[in-house]
Image 1 (cartoon, rainbow, N blue to C red):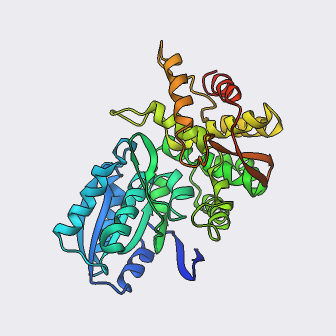
Image 2: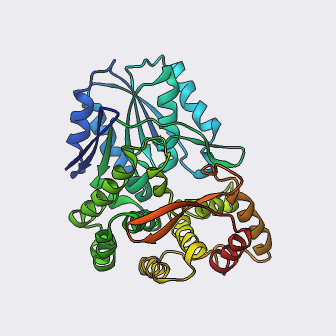
Length: 369
């Protein structure tokens, strides 16, 4: 199965790879007009069984494969990671017709795509997402970036992978928590666009948790089609595409406030789930949409607050940090941060959060309850 789409008259695709060995990847790279040099930027934490199959496929392509192992933790989404890739490209004398293939989650994908866009003003770029959140969200849309001066994605641009490979093998190997962390981004697509997605999530939980590829690939396809619908005519996020940020203003503030040098305390998707609850609560209180979202999050054992993340004596400082970080959100165009107001399923609007007391109340009543 292939999803084809066009951006500014250029063709792109997402390819669903059904086998452990991936003839789709082999075919795409073998037939590519390039200088036959490739750099594979791969998360060193990936399952060894998957990397074994991938290396086997890449050896068949006839490309000279240069390996760069990286750590895809959120704390490493920074300029050091970016220049590590760029330094390697310069050292090995890659050209514009060389291939950068990234293999990892959202961090690896975002930083690799930024490096591919910057090196010689653009080289050939492919991507294999390996976390559920990356598979259903960040792998498409062309957003690149690094975090700088404690602001998420404050440096970046737009650069699309020519082909994104959705691998059955990857889906089977994703750890349980990482797999579930992608569910809120799927829920988001259902809420802003397609109620069918919400019904599928509600009634097919067993098949999704078993990683039944027939059921799961259809759910991923519907989610990615939603994303394509919102970004294809608004690449630079001037209006329509902003709706894909539903939940992200609060989510990014939560992530920045909980970051740790030792580990990813909260997954991006987990934060998005809580963030969507916050944005509905800020606009409407605990209405039917709030209860629907809360029920789906609980249905998939996902957090609805930070009560399981808080440390003793930490609550007051966390509250202040979240509030401060909300006002650093990159979507802000005035003094007030912007969020997505969900009016009903499939209908939303972009608003500014002007009520500071309501923001504080939302943090207390939802995030830190």
